[in-house]
Image (cartoon, rainbow, N blue to C red):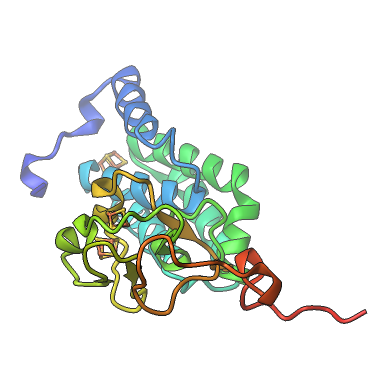
Length: 228
Ligand code: SF4
Ligand code: SF4
Ligand code: SF4
């Protein structure tokens, strides 16, 4: 939104500002990842700040950039402190209640989700499997019926397979757009975090793949076993 067209929040009542900010925040109420919540909330509120004072204009932008970096696996030590400081600066230094209310909510997101922020930064993990950098999609072999719809739908051509074959997804090509998960009526396309189940290396006829758990398949695939 161009600056000239933006609402001048200084002229609005506190109730009007609060209602607006809370509505924006509520859009994220179902989002289980606090980092992504911060990223999306600051992206929308930075666009509707009137931009008149630096702390609100730049502060919300910086919150958004730091949250975006964390969600991309580029989080650094000290990022949580930076996010907290900026939130407090917004509360104290904003010219009107808009920046102050945004700061209160971002501070709350950090405080409530601090463990998840730390996991994203230090362990490069998103337990809710929301941040695209931290999960991959795979086709659950036992659910796939080889209908080929996901392959036709995929804009990245990341899916291999053909009619009546168990399809496979190339994670290095997939951009996690999620379109295949919507088209698949068998709910065969699922998310995996750090542990990916054993999967076929290439498309094989539907019904022929066995996970072979005794050979390291299933959820333990790829993990080194402890010896007694
Ligand atoms: S805090 Fe400043 S920049 Fe933000 S909406 Fe109010 S007047 Fe505009
Ligand atoms: S993953 Fe789903 S959409 Fe793709 S071939 Fe298998 S059943 Fe069909
Ligand atoms: S998430 Fe998107 S890019 Fe990845 S396999 Fe599915 S449709 Fe293709």
